[in-house]
Length: 463
Image (tube, rainbow, N blue to C red; front, top):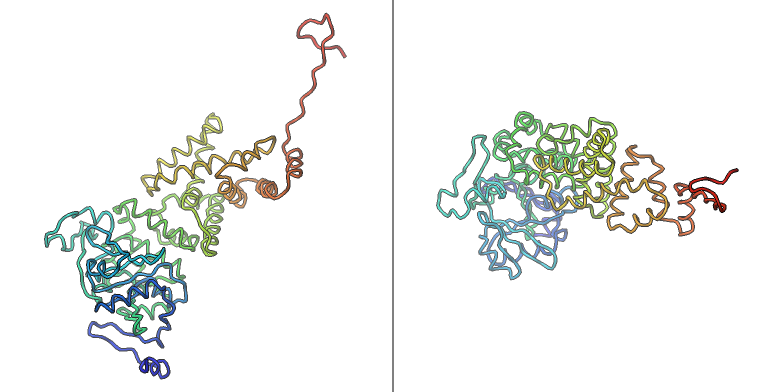
């Protein structure tokens, strides 16, 4: 305690440990232990009390340095997964090849990983390459003809663990007991300069895992960082390697970008780097059309605002907006070919969803909500009789209404239509009835005159 007070008052110079990490005191980084999540802090303390190392690692340290609120708190340790599991009653080991431990505190979950050497985060594909293989060969660095890592899961030291991470700003380790940051590659300085820099040779690291190119675009957009020139240089030439990545993994990365709270900047960053062909190839079609570009910009801006204000955002709604310009284009083409409006819309939905599965692999569980939102759009044009009341009662009305407002904002439909539905929800029953009569009331039927006796059937009464 006395040493901590002296350090705070007089400051302490950074020191370097035997593994070349620069160890920064509180005065050099400003992260206090009381800023940590209680569960993460308790996890680190429990590991330390048992004689193991326990550090807050990666994105949480980076975000705290940038005065941002971390979304997740991850812990790295020299304890094996089995040793971690024995220390925490409410914990479980997950993963077949490289195991990690989930430690639960109430509703919170802390991911605890053992220090790794010369590897990358486990993926489903990596898991399938040597499932059940316990031989020493299973722990060698396996790569394909493009240099992509297929298997590289071995335990190591903290220095090894830092070296296998992608960017310098993610290779930071915070010791809550001493309030120190272990910085192996100048990540703290890069945070201050707001620069994203790859650890090691960028060409080699991208070949090991091409998804790192997508992560570079995502972090640059989320953190408002500029990408180091050497880190950016190989991207244009290596972008085609994304075609070798499983579509499900690309989808996961796309979802992280779109739900980062900075999706608008992220999508344009992808296109600027030429990476959209590997993640969102449909952007070329959308952003080259003025109406489609306005619609997508409005949708992404709305999503960013919701996430930044801690409101939920549905992935199905978001991907529904991304695919809508293509659905609309195909719908109009089918109608022009003579198809009736409703069958044409449903045919367009199916065609677009089938086509995108080879590009992005949007899970089928989102199909239902996307189709419902799309199918409700023509019903907003029907503002007479009981149809508006029935539409208000539909379970997907709110999502479909939000979708309509985006269409109105982009100029695809008249702004008056969105305004009408906004007012229709707000006013009382009498005013609603008045709106129906004024806007789209059915014309009154003409009364038939009674025939006089003796008139032939079908003859009308003479004037």
